[in-house]
Image (cartoon, rainbow, N blue to C red; front, side, top):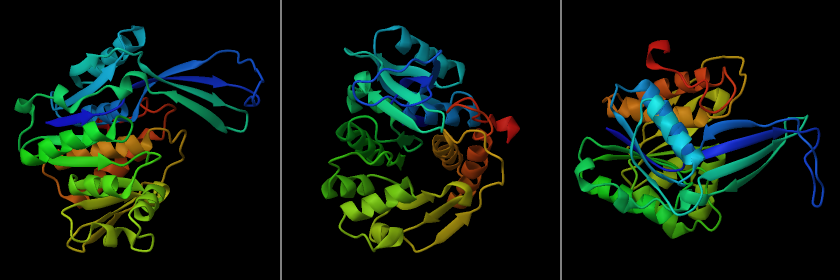
Length: 297
């Protein structure tokens, strides 16, 4: 099974002529509401591509209307939500202002996303057949503890180190690498991790040397690259498309790659599925709207 442990948000998006500065107020004619959070996005992407009943999400929402809607959305998309619990704080929410030039300003209230615990996941679900998917929008210590439990059970850990948080130190980065089977980053995140580890010139191959971790670097329209500890390198080109909205493409890639690996496909084949799914996700607005179903691949 694929178990996603991570964030789940409601995104509130207002479109304005200009983003207000300090002390300023602007009026928007309306706002859009989207389901989001990197964890939930990746769970939806995986559930749309995996066999029925193969994807579950562990997370925390507030005991409020937003939280219940988010749970319903996951279930409607085929992800089990039995491991989502109600916390003591409101559901996570992102407040997004977009101006006429498509620039944006985003404030994220983490809320219940600060409350997930590794202990929320029962031991019986952690086996050699478990593929755990992680990101960086819930407390790192809890993600790390769960990753270590999955590795001890013989399962697989796919860790999307996004975003790289402020204050993330060398010990944290080393622990993350040591607890991951596959690390997924974009080019900027790869550079950030190399700098944190004090090896800015080492490159990905240098970072994973001596580990058991493969690294996948996403590169937008250029596709994705994979590097293994054995020195192998793979590149898969992205399909050529005219994108409508790239929001959620990276999360779609992560979910698709996890599905491919869970099905026993090779890393190169997983990159291919990830690139094709991410391209299709760019053909509709919103993070989850365009995420493809397997029959459309």
